[in-house]
Image (tube, rainbow, N blue to C red; front, side, top):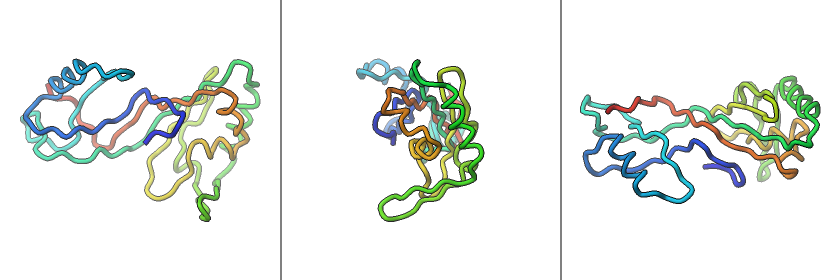
Length: 169
């Protein structure tokens, strides 16, 4: 699920299919449905395919990682952002208190490729089993807690699935 106040530009939607249909036919039907605020990018099967192009048994989509960008407001000191990113690269772990439980995460195991690109902070967050630190908690831990309340926009720009299959049409 996407956290409150995070824009999603590439989300995964699981749809149960009860008839034989190609991925492209399903995509066109979704486009024709014209849901407000939603555009349909690609449709693909996430399961083993028997060669017919239609998965005999659908599996659950499993997330491998998500890519985020945080658009930094124009008036922010970018050196402050760079210092926060340096702190993240220097820290080995961070811990947060969550519901009377401490969650500790090894930063390098969860957050990959944390960097600033012009007015954007870019990061890939790997999906891990068990409790882990959220991206907003990482920002807090590296001194960038004021970023989002001050108008920065966080976007999930890409979701990567485990065992994605190419569209078969």
